[in-house]
Amino acid sequence: MARFEDPQFLDHLRLAQQAGATAPSQVIGSFSRTVQSCISSVGFVTALVAVSPLVSVVAIISAIPSLLAQLNSSKQRANHLWRSSPAQRKQIFYRSLLTEEQAVKEVRLFGLGSFLHNRMLKELKDVSAGEATVDSRVFRVQTPLALATAAISGCAMLWAVRMAVQHRLTVGDLTVFIAAMSGFQSAVGGIISGTTDLVTASLGFKHYRIVVDAPPDLQVPEDPKPLNPLLNVIEFRNVWFRYHDRAPWILRGVNLSIHHGEALALVGLNGAGKSTLVKLLCRFYDPVRGSITWDGEDLRALPIEEVRARIGAIFQDHMAYDLTAYENIAIGDLSKQDARDAVMEAARAADVDETIKALPRGYDTLLSRIFFAGTSRGDPEAGVVLSGGQWQRVAFARGLMRKEADLLILDEPTAGLDADAEAEVHARLQEHRVTTTSLLISHRMGAVKKADKIAVLSDGIIVELGTHDELMEQRGEYARLFNVQAADFQKPVTKS
Ligand code: ADP
Ligand code: MG
Image 1 (cartoon, protein in one colour):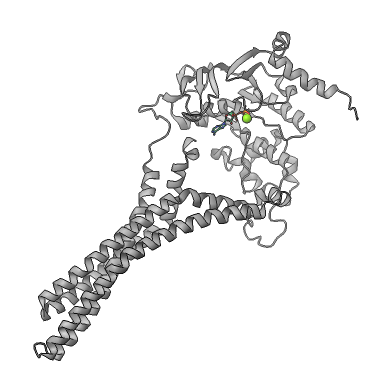
Image 2: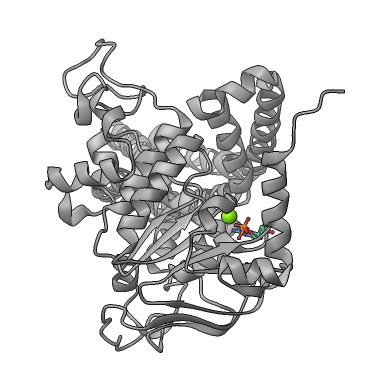
């Protein structure tokens, strides 16, 4: 995941996308234009040589500075594109906030429209100012060169006219000379613009190569060991982690075991590092120090896709795909895309089956208002918008699709659910857990309490580990968190 948080890489990515859209046709177009112009310029030069070899050499030489200046200007433009990429990305970001549905509530309520618009304009102005600087630099270099070329060819024409006046050239020679001279000039113009476009396209292509040739950001084992189903334990062994070299440590020596068949709950304050621990477990990042092992084997030595395929997860920041309800669940296990029963079973387990069936087209209802489903253009029933809690249950069903996963990770899966739904979901989970090892992260102590073991993460380490009863007896952090919540429920509402 680190690549997606690296601004420089994101700049390369954006420019690569840009080049990907335009470079192929630009390369083909400018290449054929260059070849065409080369052929016609050879014809015109032959005609010029027939009249005067010396003048044709001068004409050819006079074109060279313009070509060099153009090539230099295309490099300058490419450099500017690279320098202005952060501002361009910000500009795109502000623009998308102003036009996408996700932000519209806050933009309206907080009156952010002109604030974001002004920010967008500021970035645009910076980009344009940079462009203007490049333009004026190019103009200053190119104008004298273009004038020089024009002067040289003007002199050549005058020379030819003079020769004709002196009867050293015939009128026919003069006509051929003037026609060949102007033909040559326009062919040279074609060569110059063609090569410049070729160079510009290839400079954009450089970003594409950087993205495509980027080495994996996680170490890939040369000869990965086969991954067996989990038999014993997944272990965090003295795991230290921070997001980058100068960031604070998030995990400072975590030791934790998730035993096969066990339901482990992890609690801790906001920002304690619980979701970070999950990301390491799915190997989106590697520990900076220490290791995570799967039945004793370091995750780094195992085939990464297979590790991930053995994990089912419901992330705290789950996705809401603009797909049908069916697809939204089925993508949790692509190997079961067509298994309607499996999808419906997962939906039932997540207690969202009834809700989906009640939608205008049941499981085939599009959960989006931004596309039309199939031929339903204009049909108001074509797409629906789910509530936050309903989405959470859909995401929950998606996570449950991997029934035979060795590990089920639930990162605050019930945070957006109402109390009834939460109780129901946990009852279903209890059934599910019989076969699965699970890691539950939740702020709902009622749910955590039922886990086989509870770990408390604080200051980057596991400070407490045990069953609910054991930890309550210890009267430590867990007991404090539990009592705060319990007291909150029991407290009478006092109005002052
Ligand atoms: P929790 O899930 O326990 O609430 P997280 O694991 O999400 O906490 O975050 C732990 C800390 O790591 C927070 O201080 C957060 O700011 C930081 N953090 C989370 N994700 C990133 C990231 N991608 N880059 C840098 N810091 C991050
Ligand atoms: Mg979290």
